[in-house]
Image 1 (cartoon, rainbow, N blue to C red):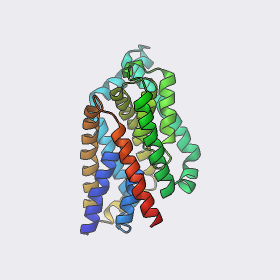
Image 2: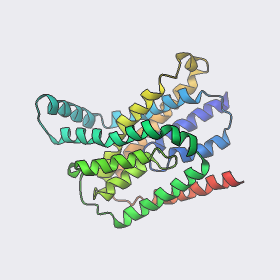
Image 3: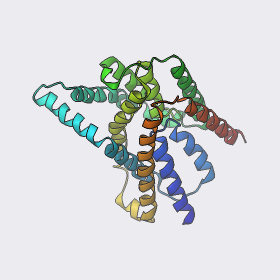
Length: 270
């Protein structure tokens, strides 16, 4: 029982941090599953709980922004008033489409052929290299108000690539944002706002196979612990990453990804 509680806490912390910090949740789960191969927790149900925790974190942190975006987006439909917030709402919808289509057509293929330690390690390194290149060559000029439909679509396509384990949804969308001349903070903010429909959709999609009995068949305290940890650490990750990127390079995350890849390969080979 103590092992289950520890596993719930660790998974909640990892989900909360890695949903928003660009260091790959799947990479950390590879390591964690090797430490706790038999935790005795319903993984599908628990995954839904953890995602709901991070969804709550991002919605609460950006509540004012999301409220303004939603209200003005609705006004753009009813009254045809295109404010900056309404435009941002439409761009977020556009940026979500590629991930939805990629998930619909390729998720089963990815689940069958790309969920391996080697793929995770390779993507950790590749995206880490892209971080270094983005920091070196990207022009950090524009705020999020400068995003157009082409930039939003590019970031959306990048988000679709994040279905490959080891990529990091936040990581690749931040890189894509920076490549369109966005400032780091603007790219991170847009990435976080994009996460709302994606996390919501992923959570809703997984609910049908879940039975309520699956929650109460075990100690419900495991799920409460996971939710609380994912919410708290997700909120903290959002807050401090936005502060950090104002004046600091993202290269530190690239170096961390390289180290994690080495650890995973060591586990895989030995």
